[in-house]
Amino acid sequence: MKKSLFLFLTYCATVGAFAQNLMLKDIYIRDPFILPVAEEGVYYMYATSPIVENGVTYGGMVAYKSKDLKTWSDPVRVFDVPRDNWLTGTVWAPEVHRYNGKYYLFATMNSATVWKAPKEGHPSYVHRATQIYWADRPEGPFQAFENKLPHTPMGQMCLDGTLWVENGVPYMIYCHEWVELMDGTMEMVELKPDLSAPAGQPVRLFCASAAEWSTGGNFANGERTYVTDGCFLYRTKTGKLLMIWSSFKDGSYAIGIAESVTGKVFGPWRQQKDPLFEKDGGHGMIFKTFDGKLRLVLHSPNGGGLERAHLFEIEDLGDTLKLKGEVK
Image (tube, rainbow, N blue to C red; front, side, top):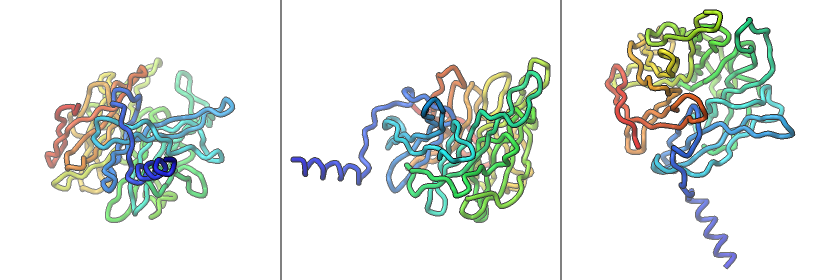
C-alpha cells in the first residue's frame, strides 16, 4: 500500500498535477505577471511574499499555477532574497521571462536604509532597485548572480524593470522614481548576453509628463509630481513597437500607451492620446493564451488592501491596442 501511494504521488509530481482551489478574487496581488509555459500547459502568476525572521522582513516571491486562468493553485514559494544580497527588503513587481532556455526573475528590491536627506514634505530617499535572478525552471528556485548587486544604478531610486530583446540584444526597461525626480522617467539599459549585469549606460526614453493623459498630482507644498510605473513592451501585428505603462489620470491609477517612432527600443517615443485603462487599476502586462488569444492582466483597485488581478481581452489593431471586455 505504501509503495503504491509513493508511486502515485511520484506520478502526480511528474505530470505536474496540482489542485486548483482559488479564484482570482481570492488572491491579494499587486503588479500581477502571468507567464504561459506551453510545454507544461500551465500559467504561472507571480506575486510578492515577504517573510519575517527575528523581527527582520526579507523579500520573497510565490507562484500560483493554473491550467485555465480561472482557478488557481495554492501559492508555491519560488524565491527568497539571499541574506547576503546588497538589498534584502521587500520585493515589488516580480516578473519572470524565459530567455535562452532559462527563466529570469526581474524583481524590484527595497530597503529602509535612507541614502539621501529628503526635501521637506517629500518621501524618504531609500534604496530601491531592479535586480535580475535566474533559474532553470519557472517555479525556481531563483538564484542571484555572483555579485548580488542591482542591475539599475545604485545611486538612484529605480523600479519595475522588464525585459525586451531586439535583434538578439537584451535590454532592460525600467522606471526612475518620481520620488526622486518629481517627473518620473522611463529608462533603458543594455544587458550582458547572460543578463548578469548591465552592458552599458542607461538611456532616458521619456518623462511621465509627456503623456497628455498623465495629469500628475501635487505635494502639500504645491510641487507637481508625475509617476512612471509598470512598463511592458509589445510588438503589434504590423510591426509597431508599443509600451504600456502606468501613471495617474485625474487621481486615478491608469495605463497608457507609448509608441516608438522608429519601431526600435531606442525610440524616440511618443505618447498616444487616450489611456488603455483608466478605472483605478494598472501595472499591466500582455500575454497570449495557449489558444492564441491576447490578454491584459492588471491589478485593481489600486489600494485599500483590495487589490486583485483582473484579466481583459484586448485587440491588436496594428497601430494601437483596444481594450475589450473583462474575462470572467
